[in-house]
Length: 368
Image 1 (cartoon, rainbow, N blue to C red):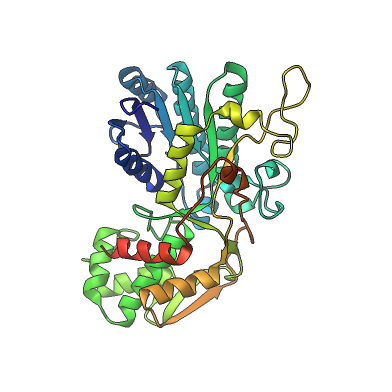
Image 2 (cartoon, helix red, strand yellow):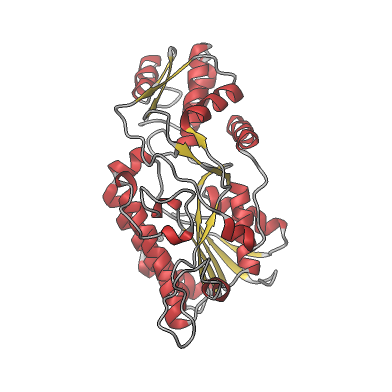
């Protein structure tokens, strides 16, 4: 990518998009384009086409999505499949119509089967049933991956799909109704510590910044206590969903951004579709009947931690000494979901930040 190329980062205020923006700026890219939702509704095909007509971006980082944790995924199933399919249709379609040179589509490792072999390589895609709680979101992301792959095969475009593991970092979503597991746990344990210490000023600051169901720092103490209790946060302790036994892999969002920029700068689809049959079983060679598939790239650490051990790590980081319990009546989701990042490693990129350092950075950012 030329340093003066016009680069559109869809979702530039989100967890990954903001990190990609920051990474590109540090590397000297000068023409970055971002639009907030009030400026550009990615669900609106007319608005998206008008945006591409006007801006004519040369490269697209597709980091925009309708996302959430296990509660949100299981509750708002129609929203997760419909909204993501619509956004993908609009951005990928207009990228093709406007001759975008290269597009990076961000998916999720939830695309893989619930009982996929561990660690999960790219070849596990579509080999078994999905996890029920996030099936609509996963299907939407599989569709996006296949759109990129299909445009590449039919039209010779250069659209690359990457599947990040669980991400966390600056600008994460700490909404107790919709956030992912790690930021939700950090906020819950932080608030429980404040309740335990009777630190109402800190609680009011937190709720003014991020109201919960309309309850903010100006609400009565009873309203605050009742609402936080609904989400398992009391002065007696913190209740978390599930058994605490599931294993999860986490990647610092700024490292995810670095991997994305690395791939956009150095990797092309033809490299992914013409590799060895060991990496890409069934890849299509010219003049044969073999098929091209599994050209996407896992982005992860290849390391995992149980949810229970993660809660202990967060409690130690927050200096919370209260109780943490698990409600086994609530779903665990997939019990294990560890990526195999060997393809990414073979392309020349490795992670650096481990989970203990990442949690400390995350909590420092949250407090600031």
